[in-house]
Length: 225
Image (cartoon, rainbow, N blue to C red; front, side):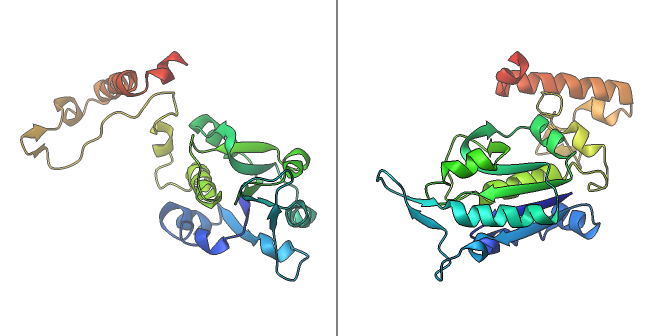
């Protein structure tokens, strides 16, 4: 999978992709993340990418021309399955959405900044608008990093145990059950006996029951869905 991220702050995204699981995914050639500096596609001497909004009001707006130039440049090199805009008013990201995107080959992510992007870019180029929650960040870079992390770990071969992702929270509309490791007793709290039994069927049943109970108490809305 290749993900091209259009941003005015490429340095902000260097670190998240150079550690842990995403680093291994890149080293294995399973994931390619390309940071594209939007200012390089500005026609002004000052590399301006924003301007005042029509109608007045606080906050600058990212201009059409640099974004259009950048996207058109990328599209000349390859075809893209989706062009994503990270925005608070997009569809809220969830695990099912990430499962779908993990099957894609080439994706562009556009990171907004300031007051947002000119609406005409959304109409002309964007195929999917995604939010990571009901709050506002200074820009779309951190949201893009979250998207890449959530998708990247689902790619076959990325995780050392490929079954691990299948049991993550939300994969079956349930939260994950509690997990334990050594020691068996910690501050008088013991690991549930069933997990020490070695009985795979009973362990799986216990985990499923715990997942349902945890979902019922913490996220009953998932059971309603």
